[in-house]
Length: 168
Image (cartoon, rainbow, N blue to C red; front, top):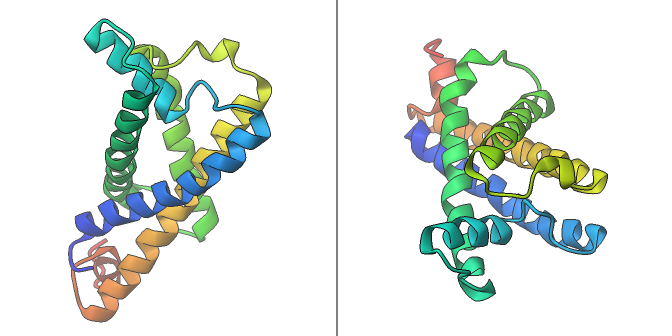
């Protein structure tokens, strides 16, 4: 892609899509959706705004909207932060993004009261949050690299072209 920020939004959406495919496996492994499932967060936050329970159907709709915006914005934030992160192989860079998302969510969830307190989560729920943020990070970084490489080949100004020209 010619625009590195558009590529970052697309890469975040790709990471979110990969993560969404993992959600059914996670829920089956846990036996239920965890407290940080998007529909639970949406229901909790929307209920606070509306001062009533919005119901499962509305929560699912809002959860989809939250995921559709959140993942691309995380991709964009990563694209801005990437120049400051040491280069290297795909997996460590992706895991760095996943760790950043994990840290952000561990700060944001309690601050927004978006989930039950983390101390009430099971070990499995904690492990799945680590796993899913890692998967999101690696998938998003892989998509950014693919889009950046395509941009460099096209002579665009994406991340790959900027690196190739020594500007990044």
